[in-house]
Each structure stands twice: as structure tokens, then as C-alpha cells.
Image (cartoon, rainbow, N blue to C red; front, side, top):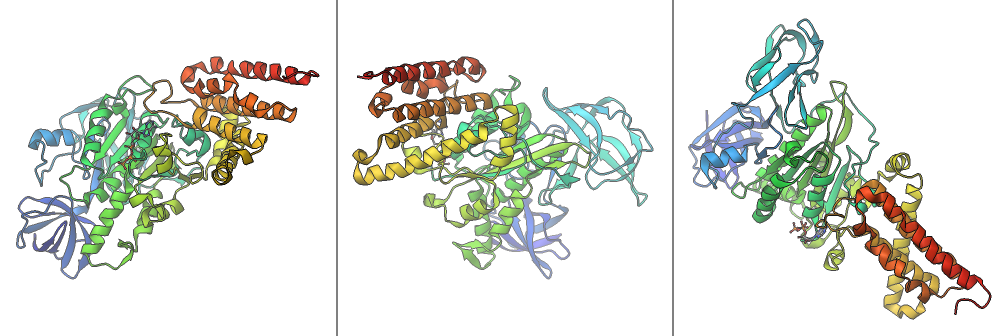
Length: 592
Ligand SMILES: Nc1ncnc2c1ncn2[C@@H]1O[C@H](COP(=O)(O)OP(=O)(O)OP(=O)(O)O)[C@@H](O)[C@H]1O
């Protein structure tokens, strides 16, 4: 037992000989949770994850003998945790609205019993390695939990529990480790959150994470196992984008980390998520979701912990062979926590007060994304998506600029688009995806071989229109040729008929890959055929007045994702309209 020497906000200096860096510590009479972040001689600096108000020098400091770790086992799904994995529902029951400080509640329900089935063929005498599957538990109606040997466990199986109902603390297997020691395995194990969980090897990520959002999937795709960022100024729609991904993406497991956003946003998430229906099963989305949310009475440094808790949960389900997506809202708040701690430790600030290790911390976090072959030989992925909230919307600030270097997919939200009520306000000029090549293979095989060409054509048209818009601003629309005016119209059709997508409109909130491609293809066909007519002398005014243009803008809400065949009927309408015009103008003396 040690004692507190000094308390400075969320940082406590303690006299605690022999404590290790990273070790968890409980400090003060209340037993507040903290973690050693620096040591010098017999003293250690502890980052405390709860308010240190009224904690005094001289009070006790107790080392717990292990680093900040999470419990991993059945019962995680559907849970809402705080930044140090305390279950919020049970916590509220125990202490009411204001979480009592120092409260220690088990993350996994100790009383609940789970129906365990040992893995077929697994019997005493088997040589087991870390990460292998011992048995299975139906965790929810849709997700089967694979009970794993902890990654650091290895040896001869000497006992395995038969089929039956077990609580997480019950011993379900005994292992004789190479040292001869017998290790008891339970339905759950602990894992330190700052250590990436091991896997056999990295796989190439090949299939896209389909989010149902056209600007994301078609224009700036992300792969399962990939890393993405959503930077955006205040109110540009980061939260809506992340919620849409959590709600609609084709990942099997969803982890939503609400890290330090404003209280009311958190309340909204806590209220809305438990009511959402899973579009793939018709059941509750929470059956395959976990929420990690910092409560407002936890200090900023707890945001750090919640990011690591989230990513460790993601790796754990990846290790069971699932595709997991984790969204973190927002990594800027986490970076602010790093800055606050660095400041209090008197570390040299480098950029805008952030410590020199900001970039490496961000990189190490995103490095935990990936598609892997697990220790059990399964294939799973963890996709990481972080929101970034640059102050004043300035993307050159340190957190955004470092993140941009690290991620492969960058969905840049723009204030101008949001102000113009163009949602999702993802800017097609500033955004990028390094995965478009791999995604193209998937789209070609599963949707249409022309995907990459159509995508490139649309992006080129959007870029051309942005350039033309600048000219119009300078010299007025009269300076444009007919072809240029038609290009502007083509880009407007893409923006309004394809890119804009309301999260709140039932038919359009989710768009299947087939519908995404069909919409894009139809708009480009329309534009292409109009261009041909300009070539034979049809005046651009006549094209611009065609009623099919307005129809093309509305297609997205007229046909749902399961009505792609009906939607494709619009191609006939386009062809008919343009053929009629062509015959009119093709005939001598026609067209007047
Ligand atoms: N895809 C969308 N469809 C319709 N409306 C949207 C969409 N995206 C954003 N909005 C509108 O923009 C508003 C602000 O979005 P959101 O709360 O996600 O912004 P934010 O960037 O997370 O804000 P903050 O900086 O406050 O965290 C939403 O309340 C909604 O009205």
C-alpha cells in the first residue's frame, strides 16, 4: 500500500515503490480507478479516470497488480459501458444518475448462466494454443459467442466441461501449461487494453464495408478491416454519418464509442440505439452492438481509456471470426485528453500544445484495424472509423493532419455543403480512398464490371463542374459553351440524384450496392445521351427543359433497394426521350 503525495486535477503523484508502468491503481479513500503513466524512483504518476475532487495527499494508493484490462466473454453484446468498462445500467441501479466514484462493478453479469457446448472433437489430452475455440455459447439470438483460450494460454487440455449452463466465473476447462502449472479457464478472460491482441497473420482486405451511403460506398469506399476518418467542422454531420454506419453497415458486430462528446448527444445515442431495428435480422440492433460512453462526470482523461476499451472489444470479436466495425466519436476529444495530461506532466508541447507522441499514438490506434487470420484459423476483421472535430473546421490542425496521413479512407465533411443542406456533407474534392482499386474488383464481380469506369467518369464530371462554377462566378454563365452548360447539369444530377441522401427518409436512408450503381449509371447515361444530341445540333436549352431531368433527381426516393428492376425501367424512358429528339433534329427541317 502506498500513499498520495500530490493531486493535480486528474493526475496524482503517489509514493508506491515497485509499481509498474501501466499498472492499475486505486487511490484515495474512495478507491478511484487510475493507471500509472510515469515512474521515477519510488514515485509514480497516476492518471485517474474519475474526478479527484476532495482526494487529499496522505490518502492511500493501492496497486492492483495488472494493467488496465477488460473482461472478455459472453454478455458483452447489448451492453453500455463507461470508459473503464463499468456497465452503465447496473451502475445507475447502484448509484443513481451520478455515478458514485470508486464504484467497482463487474463488467460481465456474474449471475447470468450461459448454455455452453464444448467444441466437437475437443477432449482431454489435446494440445491447445492461445486463441483456439473451446466451445460455443449462443450470446444473443443472432450472434454465437466462441469461447477462446486466452491468447497467452497454451498447454495440454486436462479437463473440459460438458454441455451445460454455466456462469462466466465457472471453470470450464483446465490446461496444463508447459511449466507444469495448471491454469483454470473460464467463460471469460481479461486482456490489457493497451496491448493489441495477437493473430496468426494479416489477410488482404478485399471486401468493402457496405454502409448503404452512396457517397461513401461508391465514391470513397472502405474495406472490412480498413481504417477511416470522418473529419468535419461543428455540426457538419459527423454523428449522423457514424450512426448511419453503425446502423446499416454489413459488419456483424458494431462498437460505438462516444468519447467525450457533449452530454446531450450522448443521451440521444443512449436513447436511440436501444430502439433501433437491425435491418439484416429484423431484431434489435443492440443484439450485436456494444456502446462505450464516457459520462460527463468522468474527467477528460477517461476518454483515452474508452478508445482502448472499444478497440480491444473489437479485436476480441474479430478473434472469434467476425467482421467488426468500431466508430469513435470523436478522436479529437481523446487527443485533447493526451494534451491535458502532457501539460500537467510538464512535457514539452510540440504542435498547438499536443505532445510529440500524438502522431504515434494515433497511428498505433489505427494500426489495430485489419483483416486477419486468427489464432484459431478463422477470418475476422476490425474496421476502425474515427470522427475528428478540428477546431474552426481547420483541417491543417495537428489531429486532422496526422490522421489524414494514417488512414486510407478520408471522408471530409464540408461546412459549405452542410450550410447548403447537401447531406451527407462529404466533400468529393477533399475526400479520398486508397481502397478504390480493391473495391473495384468486388463491385465488378458482384454488381457491375463498369463500376470503376462509371465512378471515374462521375468524379471527373464533378471536378469539371467545380472548375466551371469558378468561371461562372468570375465572368457569368454567358461565357459557357453549350457543352459546358450540359456538364454543369450532369454534375448537378449526380449531386442531387446520387450523392445527396437523407438519413431520415425511409426509402433512401440505406441504399443497396445494386441501387447505388443503377442510380449512377442512369444519371450518366442520361448525361451521355444528351451530350450526343448537342453534337447533332440540339440546343442545350431544349435538353435542360426535359422533364426526365427532374425525374432522374427523384429516382432515389421513388424506388427502394429491393426495386432495382423497376428502377432500371427508367433507362427506357431516357432512351425514348432522346430518340424522339434525335429523330426530330435528324430530319431535314426538323427541330423547330
Ligand atoms: N445524412 C443526413 N441526412 C439528413 N440530415 C443530416 C444528415 N447528416 C446531417 N444531417 C443534419 O445535420 C445535423 C447535424 O449533424 P450532426 O449532429 O451529425 O453533426 P456533427 O458534425 O456531429 O456535429 P457536432 O460538431 O455538434 O458533433 C443533423 O441534426 C441533421 O439535421
